[in-house]
Amino acid sequence: MRGIGVAGVNRHSAEIGYWLGEPFWGQGIATKAVRALTEYAFAHLDLVRIYGTVFEWNPASARVLEKAGYTYEGRLRKSVTKDGKIIDQLLYAIVREGGN
Image (cartoon, rainbow, N blue to C red; front, side):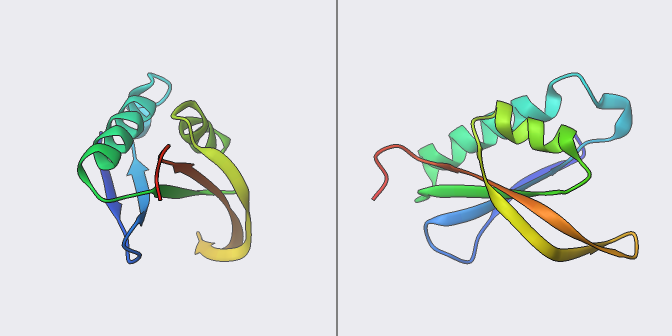
């Protein structure tokens, strides 16, 4: 695992991000890490919602969030510049059950 974290400007909502080196792809490492961090964040932080975005051309990253229990919420059109191109991001989120 190269990096994973949760941060947020809204008190009860935070963004999750992750990056995994290519030699480790396809081993379930990112999914396990996202699940573990999500469980920890809901148990120890005052969060109700965690969200993450995925570049439109990265279905493997979208699958990581889906397998970790995140739900597709929509497409953020032309929302980021990557490799010199303006592209869409896909928005995923998970909401803590029983959250206010």
